[in-house]
Amino acid sequence: MQLERSGKPLRKITRSISELHSDEILAETLACGVCRTDLHILDGEIPSTAYPIVPGHEVVGRVLAIGNDVTGFTIGERVGIPWLGHSCGRCRYCRDSRENLCDQPEFTGCTRDGGYASHIIANAQYCFAIPERFSDAEAAPLLCAGLIGWRAMRMIEAAQRIGFYGFGASAHILAQIAAWQGREIYAFTQPSDTEGQAFAMEMGCVWAGGSDQIAPDELDAAIIFAPVGALVPAALKAVRKGGRVVCAGIHMSDIPGFPYADLWGERSIVSVANLTRTDGTEFLAAADRSGIIPTVDIYPLSQANKALKKLRDGHVNGAAVLVPDFDV
Image 1 (cartoon, rainbow, N blue to C red):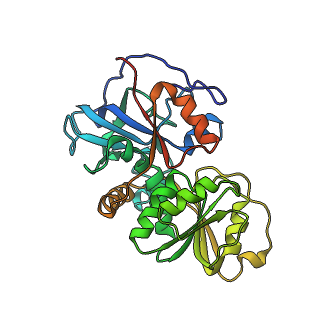
Image 2 (spheres, helix red, strand yellow):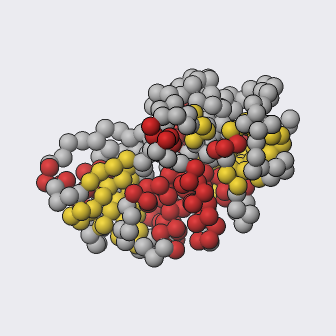
C-alpha cells in the first residue's frame, strides 16, 4: 500500500522485490502497526519523507533471505523492524552513542519503504529479535509506540507520579510498564472521551480525566503523546517544582505562549527524538519481563486507509495493526 504524495490515500501496487545489499535482510511481513507518525507522513508534516513511500515502521516479519555480511539472524526467525532504519556511524552523535540524532539517518516507512507491504527489506543491524510470548500483532506496536514511550520514560528518571497527555498506543503500553515499576500514572484524554478514560483505568492508571481537568495530585513529570502544542503549558502547570515535561511526538502543533512563572522553579521541557538500538534491546527485554499485553485492533492490509482514518478520528483503543491479505 503505497503513498504517492501527501494528502492522497494509499493505493495497492505490485512490484518486484529489490536485490539485497550485503547488510540487509528480506522478511515476509507478518504484522505492521499503524502509528500516528504515519498520519503525519500522509499529511506532509515530516519534511524528510521520500515520496512515493510505503509507510509502516512497526514491522514484525519472518526472515526469508539474508545478505552475505549479516550475522545474528537466521532464515525463518521472527524479526522486528523499527523506525530507525540506519544511521551513518560517523557524525558526532553516532560517535557519542546518540544515533537517534544522526545527521544522515534513514527511517523505515519515511525515507525507506516500510511494512505496509507483503515483504520488506531492512538493514539487519537495526532489527530486533522479538520475545516469543508476544503474538505478531501484539509485538508490532512495541516497535515504536512502546519504544518511544520507553525513551520518554527514561527522560523522567525516577519520577513516581506521571501525567500522560493523550492515551493512545504508546500510553497504553507504558502505563502497564509504569504500573509494573510501581509508579502512578494520571491519564489525560480529550474531555469528552469517557471511553478512553475507562480504558486508561483498565491499563493500570490511578486516575483518568479530561485534559481540561486538574489532577488530584501534583505531578513529578508529564509525557505528552498527543501532537497538541497547547498541552505543554497545561502540563507545566500540573508538574511540581523541578518537574519535567517530555514531548514524545515527532510532530506537534505550535506551542502557545505562556507566562515565565509556569516554567520557573526549575521546571523543564524536553523532546524525544527517534530511538537507539540500545533502547530497543532494553525495552523489549523489559516488556517481556513485565507481562504487559498490548491491546490491538487488527485490519487487513488492503484496508490500511480505513485503519488510518479510525486512528485519525480517535476510534482506536490501544493500537491498530495491519496484517497482509494479498495473494503473492
